[in-house]
Image 1 (tube, rainbow, N blue to C red):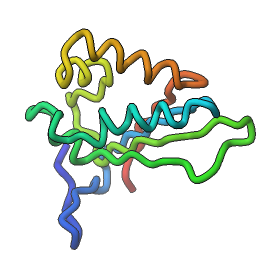
Image 2 (spheres, one colour):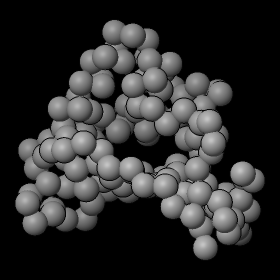
Image 3 (tube, rainbow, N blue to C red):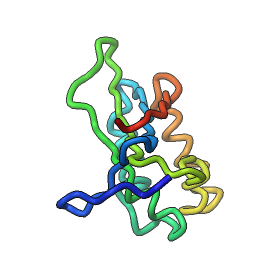
Image 4 (cartoon, rainbow, N blue to C red):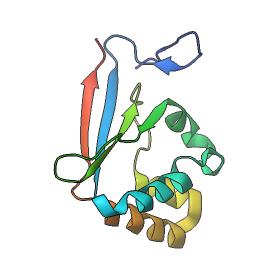
Length: 127
């Protein structure tokens, strides 16, 4: 896979034929604050990311919901654009690299506890 091309802003995006990953987190209605605190310490803390995983952080976007789903849950979306073959997208693994075993286990529990169902992942091809 190539690295995609940068647009006017210099952002890298998938080129035709490259894969893009989408992961959806369905969060319990009463756990929005908890998951957003988790995202602050995990995602919105790029200085904590290991150097070897910085490219993964740079090509990934996290989108927050604007409203609840019909069942009251909230959908947060991760976009890996382009998806990097062999990259570490594992939240437990990344947390361990960032915070060590004990804190990683605590933070991962917060992430799991906030979910109404399992994360749903899709790999798509850029047209």
